[in-house]
Length: 371
Image (cartoon, rainbow, N blue to C red; front, top):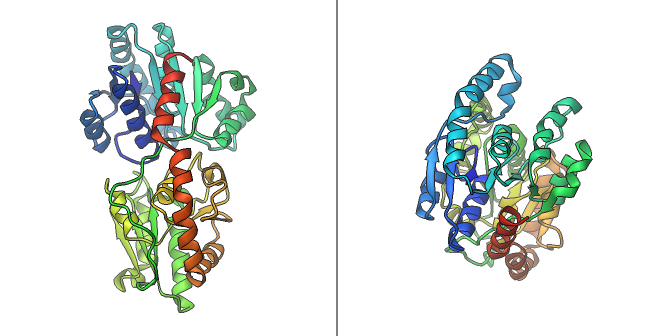
């Protein structure tokens, strides 16, 4: 049984899909529980999973506010019996809980005697030690804790050292997108920059936009596509981003596009991918997808991002939240494109091997089913 707190197709959502595909391909029947319908539900059904939807208490930042805490408590109470009933219907199932945001599933699955594994995709250090401890403590009940980077593991063990004995690092498995192409031989259309991800302050799309503005003001031929949808509650940030760069949007230099499952098409039409996260990320799926597409990447030097691009000569690290440094890194590409394009193309086979989905599926199956 696989439980996940969302139904979209961003980083952790894609890993849940890959996890389920791994079980299904090995002949293991899978029931997936989601809080609602969405593109992930469709993809899971296409993969052969039995997808169920039900209310579940998901820990979000909004839950730290009084109204959010009341809603969380209400959902916790009303969902407990349906959750227990579902767990009872599958008495021999191992339960794979995706992310830290579903602690009630960890507790209830252990109460019902299930083997329980939590796959942690988060790596945020909370300023309050008490809150950090409260978030991590349910993991003590899990038989195994899977983390997607050494950095993610360190964030947890710094708060709760005893988790180290049940922790396993499994790097994400990422499949190259279809329809890929080699880097452009020449930048005949200027440098085409791509940002893929949520439209939220922590992800840094505003940093990417300001970097491109700086380059444009210096006379560089450059454009940016921002491919992503707004995280609920951050509509104000999207409006602010559009307003700040309305002139470049109208000039076709910065283009905003809603998130699409066909990320491969966007990768094929760009020269470089940026991952300008302002706060630490647990990993860097977008960076890996870019390297698999033979594209140079520029990522923030924080969290698990350096780990994701480690050893890859086609990657540059920049300080988080620094549009000037990002603009300089992108300018390096423009002025030495022959080398950067060649390096990105030559590193691709090593990236394919390191993040092979077959390796990921094998390791996840082992962690969930046997430990």
